[in-house]
Image 1 (cartoon, one colour):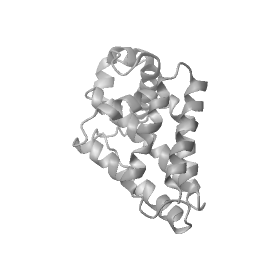
Image 2: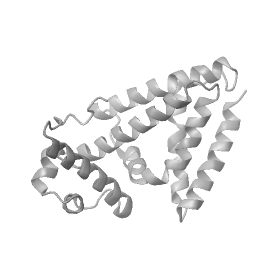
Image 3: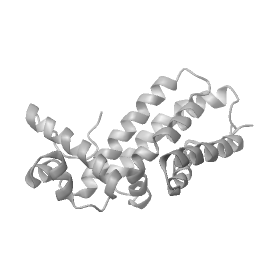
Image 4: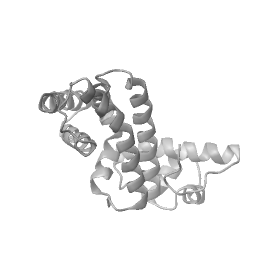
Length: 189
């Protein structure tokens, strides 16, 4: 895994644990209170001082980018698991519907960030590399239109994000699955 956030990873075990605790706390706090929560709240939840937080993540962008990088690691793991299936692309998108609610604040941030930011450019490159073999496999087996591109695939997750406007997690997943069904019907030949 490449360190997209450009922060030097600590080499001491306690420092690595602090970094991990900060990321876990950030995900939890961002999910409960949104991405504009004071970073001091995250430090407190992680049971670290503000200096430790800022040593690991100099600003909110670095912290959110690290969480996005971690999420993409999970997407990559799933993509590898689905890579042998002709319909692996569809399996991957279906798995997104299950985890979308869990990562709602990241989805919100993803929509707002500058696409030219160097860290975000690297994340997009990773996503393209993840989706490309799955798309090619689906096209090879004529499960989706030959004219589809990896860029088209990158549009699907933001479309699924509309489901986050539902009032609870069950409705969000149900809406995401419905949106995905409509999208998949449009992708198939």
